[in-house]
Length: 327
Image (tube, rainbow, N blue to C red):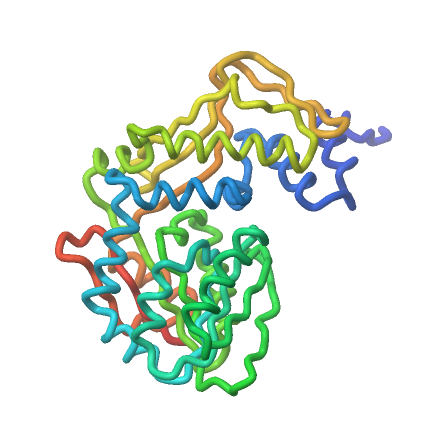
């Protein structure tokens, strides 16, 4: 009879053990960097500076999603508002500047409240104050939260007829294939019985158009990506810096997605607390996926999440789409 022995502890296992019960951000970032494919969740791109840079990206000629989605809202906004119906509470996870939301609020019939949700508290308060000036009779109820997890929706003074979650942009594409359906179900829970989802979905197109959108000549997307490291250094006391990294964005046709990375230009060791992260020359840290869909493909995902696709609006080129889902 032999005595079983435990396998030797790997350094990354020991590091993960030390992180248990610690700071949530430090734990999540470190665990991602200890994975075989090093990664940092894309939500950490959006500190105040990151949010400002993303707003600049949205105005770039190369970045088609924002202006294309706005064109749909401008041309079909009355139809979309009719589908949402009167006396709605509009909830927007990842609200940013709420630019697109204003196009909806201007068309909705007697909306009860608008709930912008953003991880950057300073950015959120700036835009909430602007919205209160623009819509003095509308309840503006901001929530500073990570919308990928549960958050409490404030109760407006006037009882609403329904809740509708507005999730514009191409943010739904940031979720992996195994995470998108649970996330859709989470949004449905936020909307509640009788509620709805209005979701922006970027569509498959010429890869050259996609790669140009994420590798703009002005370098704003590169600065946005590199700012993630500044955010971590400031919040976690890490020592990434930005000089030894470059932005990389490429199209993965098999997975139907743009993949965004930070590539190390040298061999180096980065420290997060007492944990050392070793990076090889040319090693890449994944910072974002941006999946691109077909209209039918997104409809199948919605059905799998238990949602009914009621109506879809697209631009004439079919580059982008807005979908209304019922619960």
